[in-house]
Length: 115
Image 1 (tube, rainbow, N blue to C red):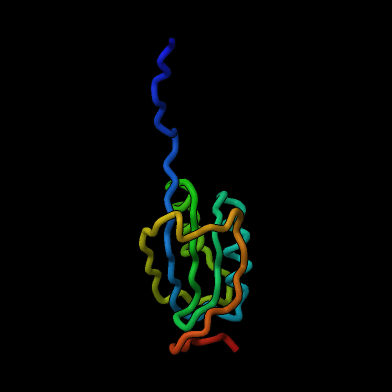
Image 2 (cartoon, rainbow, N blue to C red):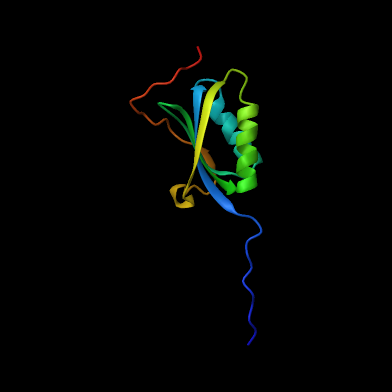
């Protein structure tokens, strides 16, 4: 009987909750996030909430870092990002098999919308 050595994955998958604050609603931000997610092989979802735009993203760590860097350095032209918060979460929190634009989450806070 032959013993097969265990093989470590070549890449490591991670999941992040990203909250974008600022004037990021009504400026094509969610479609821009969707486009970047496709380019960087990210699955998950993006939605508007009372704090701005929330992104739940799963992918290889390098892809996530490149995705977030490109998004924050090259947002849609009318968007004004004031801050970005992100934290690691469990991949179980993001069951989507692809990336989608989700419905707005209604919370008690309000965010600015570009006229």
